[in-house]
Amino acid sequence: MIHALRVVAIAAALLSLNGPCSATDVSSIEAAKRTTLGLYLTSEEVPPFLAEKRGHSLFVDVRTPAELASTGVATLVDANVPSLSLAGADPTLQPNPDFVAGVESRMVAKGLGMDDVVVLICRTGKRSSQAANRLAAAGFSHVYTVVDGFMGDGEGGGEASSGWRNKGLAWRYP
Image 1 (cartoon, rainbow, N blue to C red):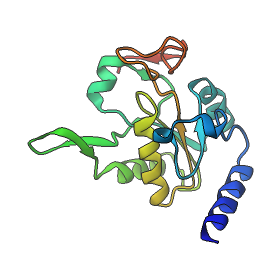
Image 2: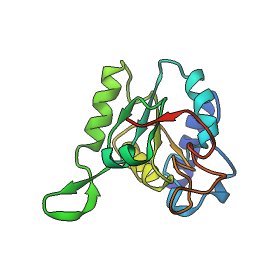
Image 3: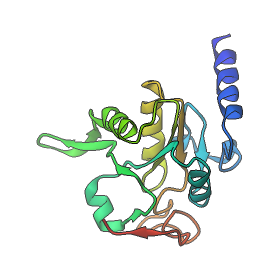
Image 4: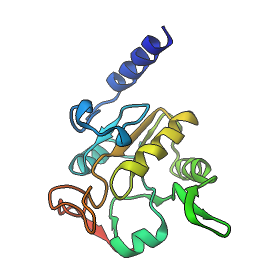
């Protein structure tokens, strides 16, 4: 029963939004990129989607500043709020404990609330889906993830057919 109610709630949320709700057939999105809210965009769908949501959205890159410096960032990105960070002497990336608060503060700065749209991008779409789930758990209701990310799924620069940068969309080095 709870699952059925969740499906109905998600469907109602999707119907309440104008514009794309899914980049592609959800069943074709690999499990590691799926989110609890089920809101997906391809890199090519982001610019017109953000234009439609003028003033009611926040576009966040969740990669580390070092990643942005080495690969670039979409020019439409409003903020960089890393979803992972280094914790003390541990050389592995851990969930950034300030991630949700960082997104909240940028929403407030833009005059937005938790019911406004948040679009997340990372390198391949996996980290942004995890970050979307963290925001959904915190009460955000319209969090989209860019399923092909900034660089696409290929190693060492991405596949020529996927990712913001490989699609020829506007980007720059920070």
